[in-house]
Length: 288
Image (cartoon, rainbow, N blue to C red; front, side):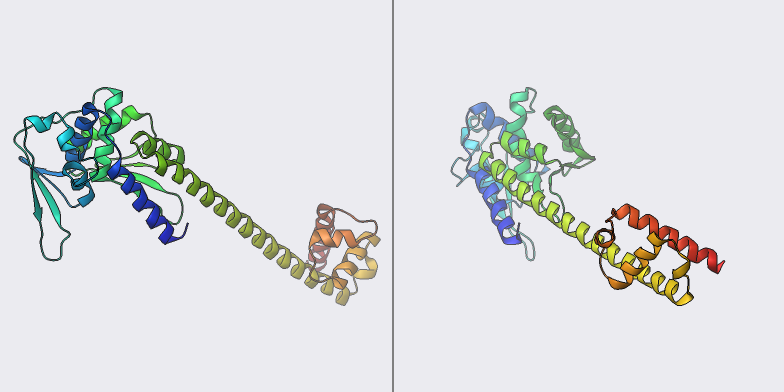
């Protein structure tokens, strides 16, 4: 997929993440906990430079999380913008001491991961393949994340503070389960197109390699045939070997398969190759 199309698709993914509905207060608690867990944390403050994550948590997103959580009744959320020269702007959230929800039930894992991915995740498309990541900022959160992602049944790789999915089906499952259903379907289509293109490139490279081998073989056989002619060996050869030498001299550039079709009766590519190997041995013995 061209770079611009890929960028637009990723923007669509994040728009869907930002505007996805919240189906219950329990899910709102889990997602808000995941969002805050993925931020840089110091005492009672949480900081992120992902402005969309800040919008998701406190507005003006379509479905701001904090007012929908059970936390909002007891813990007011203070929001401030941090700007520094030559740095991306950041958003700081200040909370009274609060114990964030840690998902224990399978039903709580996906909304929690949805929040975490918003502040600590990404989806990348290098020249080959694709991968979805979670990059965690501190060891305690990293250990918690490892425990939780192990419950998803997906093939996560990585260690310490970075975890990745590289399997197409796993990435699709992750996107679908965190509520990015349209994006998951688009990802399916995009990876099918990419797979088809990669297959076409492999076939083209395979064909090019075959052509190159055929050209090298024809050149080597033509050189051998000319040496046989100039040395006077031709008249001493069995008829079938003389025939293949004559055919190569008359058709210097065709493939072994085509050369075999020019003989009488026609023979297979492997038979032609066998005869050239015999000729090569005869010439080498004559030199030796």
